[in-house]
Length: 472
Image (cartoon, rainbow, N blue to C red; front, side, top):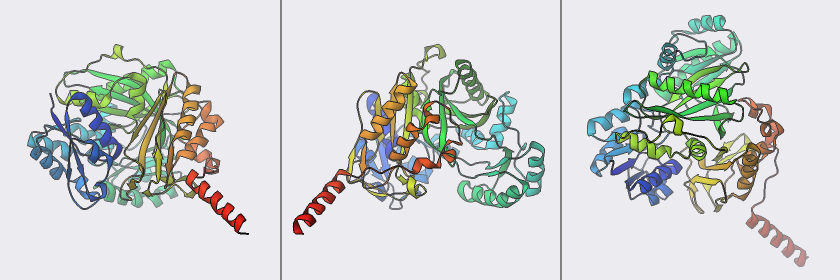
């Protein structure tokens, strides 16, 4: 069994992995840069090591991370999500140094990270894919010809892209010609390879993804689906499990598709197969994420399976503890990505000191966070600083629990997306389960909320008013 794990990440996901290690009797090692010196994952791990004074770069150096893992006596490394979690070089360096990588092998990471290769693999496996180019585009002229054949609107996508970057919708040939060089440039700068492909745009689909687990003994199962349709500019905001928009027949069908997709590439460990569901209820493969997802919490909540612990067991060579027939889903879970952003100001990041923080609690409430009162959110990383997950037996109940938990949560000193989510939960379309990836754009009025004044600010304002009144 694995005895010591280096957590090659930061923030709430690092804390999450450290907690899984603690429950399994495994020692944990945290890494941090100067910007994260006072971060919670540093305080929670059994050991912690500074890897540099630059804020981000050391987290992206596989040799630094694996060398530290070996030097500190770790026999495994967990990449979390983001950073190097889908970088095949990290898995390769781990293999060379005899450190187990908690994730799939480098060849699978490389294959599924290349969206053209992934499409081709799915076509061979009989998985439906969105019509598009057969491979990478050689020129804007080829892009124009393919688009004319499959029909507008189309999506220009970076072959090695992810996280909502390197993607542009083109509604006409003029859009395509204008965006082609832009996407190629973004693909080169963000992902190191200026390769792009084109596929038909499925207009306002529902974004459905399926969590899978696969061990090295050949067992592959799914843990049902998540609905990630509430998103802004391809960035997920609220995730739900299971989807309130699927029938039981659709649920079983897409689950089988995901298992079929994983087996087709000999997948091992935890992964997510993402699909688009169009208005005609046709599922299309979109991509496969070869890592732990941000929103894994809602799947854990409805199934009772600890996905991180299963990842560690699989990496240790152990078989899955479950068969497909053992997996059941109960009730609904909803996750809110608490971002330090100002929705009223174009969702601009709002970094700085948290002057007061209270986590919500009560039945069916889970907080995954790495923040605390007086913690300073650094400006160098993603704006997500916490995740709130709520559960209830019914769809109506999980909405009301979400409203209550969001109201209970106190986070002053920075702007957050909390009041914006409160407005979404009041929306009639959302409450009735009628939403797709166009929901946010279709409801610009959701940012017209009244902000709750922090109690200390209100108290100070009242005191100032009383002082002014008595002074007069």
